[in-house]
Image 1 (cartoon, rainbow, N blue to C red):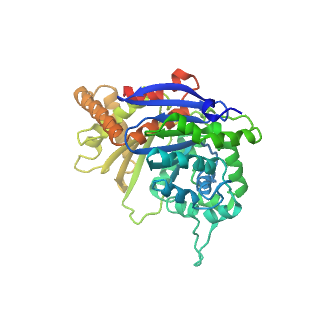
Image 2: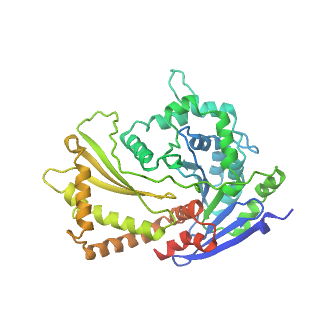
Image 3: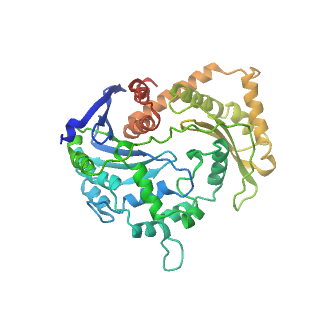
Length: 428
């Protein structure tokens, strides 16, 4: 049985932004991917990412995220992970569930505490207890007053019927028709949490997605690769002792159904104020790995919305009778992405006029009636570069981690294409 340090193979070593380097390794024993970035400073941060895909609204990824912290095979007690994290000079642990991945985080002062905590954290992720009692507590707990008090249930209860959640759900269901995980509510709908989500489904979901060859460890800070691999030795050996796993089917490789025809939807939501609403326009966009196109769209959206003299702000906000009080944009970085333009606080009587106004503004720019101000476009690009470099300087751990997560989820298997997400940090 080979020591785990020898089982990790260097796949790429890329210089990023001066002295920073990102090295990607993969274990030929377990399949775990490890991205190491030598970010300067006393902190060592870990983002432990798993690609997760759901085709229903049962909230299995979200529920499982909570149950991971309820104990593991080696440490079968709730709260042990956070207690040990505090002893390792960390401010507890955290996690989030997104549509296409689940990520667990930790940040410690110094590398020794991080290395001590790493195998314990991985034991919780890969080998949690997943007891039925923990499941019932996190989802279906009822307090002494007869109110729902399960953490998972309460989190979703607070957001399910907000205007943002209801409009976003309707939009994603329209832009991603057919069988597609991008329209699923991975946090869970309340009705599903009450009726169709089950402990058995959560355990099955863990077996399907929480496996070493679907796990990427992104570690940023001053830590030696050899010591990281040494800390993971126990997990590697435990994987070898267990029964062989079935072949892994990488999430998000299934074709996304085509968007056939444009449509409009009216979404009602509960509110104390009936005088305003929101209007969201959405288009299919480029694939997440098409970095140049994604950046170009982001730059164009900034040009259209960033200041009072921007075309959409000028036509919708900076007028005598505004259509809204703000125009915002966002891009969903999916295998097939989507681009959103949102008009906020639209007067009720103008809700059905915003779409035509936005399309008219975009058409005049497209056909050359309104000429693009290339000097201002240059200013927008320059500011984006400065903001990106500033974010890289102020938040290097997050900057590197989020790009590595994108590469892990959507980068092609071929090495040269896979490097693109990391190299992009340097070229942007």
